[in-house]
Image (cartoon, rainbow, N blue to C red; front, top):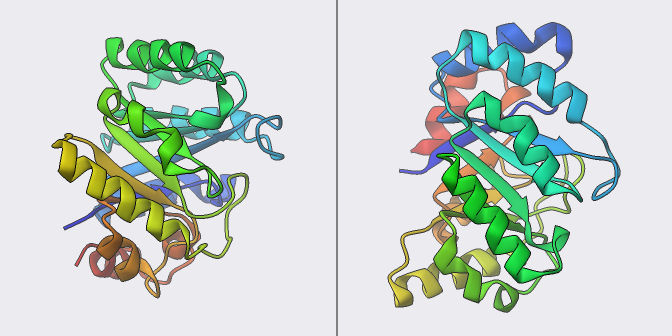
Amino acid sequence: MVEISTSILSVEKEKIIKTIYNLETAKTDYFHIDVMDGVFVENDTTEKMVEYCDYLSNITNIPLDVHLMVADPQKYIDMFLPYNPNIITIHYEAIKDKSELIDMLDYIKLNHCKAGLSIKPNTDVAEITDLLEVVHVVLVMTVEPGKGGQKLIDTTLDKIKTISEIAKQKQLDIIIEADGGINLDNIENVKKAGAEIIVSGTGIVNSEDYNETIKRMKA
């Protein structure tokens, strides 16, 4: 059974507290925190995500899954560490120097978080193969990062399959996460490709029954 990480990016501020309660009741496994800086991607969600994390830290014990779509990951790692996230994921494309990237992943681990590495749809899996041994989570973007509500790019499922095959061949203990455009219509294909954590935002929060939607996604 897969785990569900619900993105709350599209939730309106006046509905956030009620939505958090309803998602917890519906048994989401994580709250997915989409942090954007207006540089690495066009939108800037930092203030909104900090505010939502403040709410979450006060009213739920559901773990946080923080996805940093930012040009300066170190700054944002330090910004979100106080919320004790379970996972912090940074983008491979944000850091050109691999040794610096590895140092940053180690820093996340030293702060008792699972270290995640994300790739955009156009990034070849071969570019991160040597990094799979130093991460806990690999997040494959199934849309271009930067905004919610996009349609899943089918070719990204091949990346999930490739990473899954490499992990099996090398006996790596990593979790594969998929993020972007995932809903009840396509989730089976994403699961079959090898994803173990499914990120869904509008596919859940725009549904009429969170409980039923998450139950069907996990089934």
